[in-house]
Every structure is written in C-alpha cells, then in structure tokens.
Length: 84
Image 1 (cartoon, rainbow, N blue to C red):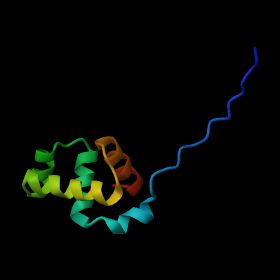
Image 2 (tube, rainbow, N blue to C red):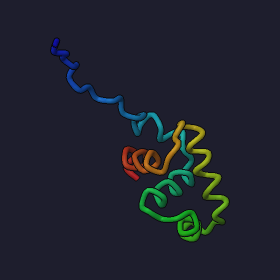
Image 3 (cartoon, helix red, strand yellow):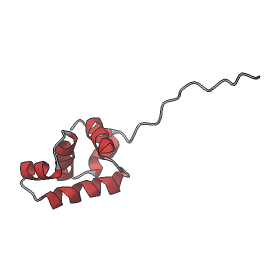
C-alpha cells in the first residue's frame, strides 16, 4: 500500500476587494446591500429606505448581475468587505 501525500491547504481567492467593487455600486445599491447584510428582509429594507420592496429587489438583482453574486451569504460577505 502506498501513502499518498496531499498538497497543503491553499487559500481560496477572496472576492473582489472593496476598492475594486465600491465604484461599481450606486449609493442606493450600497444602502440596500447594507440593510440586507444586517438581516433585514426586502420589505424591512424598503421601509427603512422609503421604497417599495420591488425597488430593493431590483437594486439587489443589479448588484448580483454586476458582480456575479448568487446568494445572500455572498451579498453579506461583500457588504463586510466594503465596510457597510
């Protein structure tokens, strides 16, 4: 029986840095992202921003499309990396 050695654990590349993504997001997109990352529902975020939940949904869809993000966890990670 042979012993197979595995390569040491390597870090997965981090998502784009804050400086690279911040200019890509409009201020209202950043605000919507901040509310969602804080745990608000779309309706709660909308009420806090004085918008309809459909507008908040549109902002978050735009963020996902611009940055290739597919989950709320990734949105939260982005918000943290942007310091929101």
